[in-house]
Amino acid sequence: MRRFLSQGLACAFLALTGLPTLAQAPVAVSPETTHSSNMSFSFSAPFISSSGLRGDHHIIRVMVVGMSLKDLEVSVPQQMASFDRVRVRDESGRTIPAKIDASQSQIKVQFDQPVQPGRTVALDISGVNTNSERGSILLYGVMGRRGEIRDSIPIGTARIQVPDFLDR
Image (cartoon, rainbow, N blue to C red; front, side, top):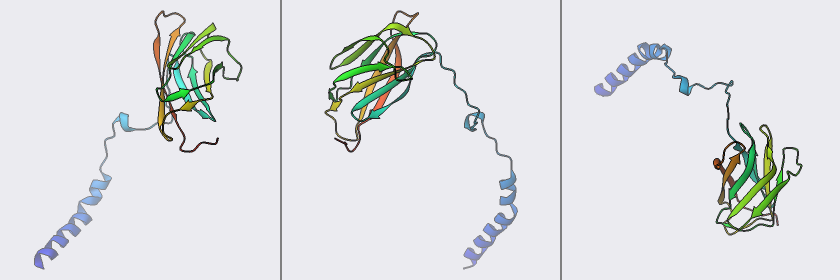
C-alpha cells in the first residue's frame, strides 16, 4: 500500500511541476511536415489529369503541358473482354480529328494536328465489358509522343475501378 501511495504522489508531483513546462516547450517542425495552402506545381510534360467511369464508358483525360502531343498509346488491361468504340475529345467535348487503331491489347491515337499545350485530351472507350470481378481495378498504361521528341514517353497509369454494382 505504501509503494502504491508513493508512486501516486510521484506521478502527481511530476504532473504538477514538470509536465506544464514540457507542454510549453517549443516544438521543432521540419519544413517537410508543414502544410501550406499556397502549394504550386510546375508540370513540364503531359500527365493524366483524371480517369473514371461514366456508365459503360471508361474515360481517361490527359493534360497536354510543355510541348505539343503527336500521339497516344494506351495499353488495354488484360481483364478487358471487349469494347465497342474509342473517341477522342477536347475539354469542351468536341471531337479531335485523329486516326484511331484499336486492338484487344492496345489503342493507338495519331492526331491529325498535334494537340497544343494547355489543352486536355479525353479518351472515351465505350461499350466496355470486362472479365474481372466487380470492385476490381483496371490499369491502363498511357504513353505519348511529343511534337519535338522522336520517342514515346510515359505519361502515366490511369486507374479505373469496376463498380460493385452494374446499372444494366
